[in-house]
Length: 113
Length: 113
Image (cartoon, rainbow over all chains, first blue to last red; front, side, top):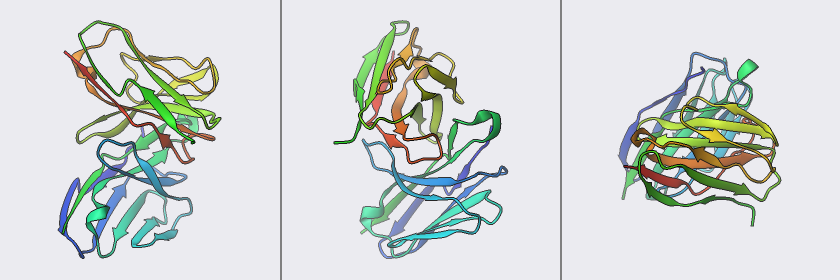
C-alpha cells in the first residue's frame, strides 16, 4: 500500500502569515492532487501536479511536485481567514492496484483574523 | 447541475441492522468510489468501481459491500453494522479513474450504537 504522510497535522496562524504544508511518501506517484474540505462538505479539488519538479500557482497558493515524484508541498502566502479548512493530498496507486486512490491524513488550517 | 448525491445525510442505527447508503451521479462518470473519514486518518478508500459491473476493494473493505448495476448509481451496503463503522462516509466520481478530478458527494454521517 502506498502511503502519504502529511505534516503538520494542525496549523493555527494569524492572518497575513505564510505557511507550507507537506505531503511525503516513500513511493513514486504518477501524479498528486490537492483538495480542500470545509466543514459539512466534501473535498474540492484545488490542483493536480503531474510532472516531477512542476510548480503550479493558484492566486496565493503555490503547489510543487518533487523531482522524484515522491513528495509535494502547498505554500500559502499571506493567509486569510477564508483559507481556513482541511487540506488533503491524494495520489493514485499504480500497477496491480490501479483504481485505488490514497489520501494523506490531512492538515487542519485555522487562520485567525 | 452536475453533482453527486448521497442519501441519507444522517443515519443513526443499531448494531446488526442492515443498511444501504445510496450514491448517484449525473455526470456520466465511469469511476466511482466510497471513502470513510475519521479524525486524524484522512479519507480511506472502501471500494471503487472502474465501470458498470466492475468493482474492487480499496484499503478498508471489511464489513462493506457495493454493487454497480448502473453507471450512475453506486450503493454502499453494510449488512451487519458494528460500532466501529461509525464514521463520515463520502461517495465520489470521476470521468476516468483515480488520477482524474474526484467529485465528492456531501457526505453521510453514520452512527452505529
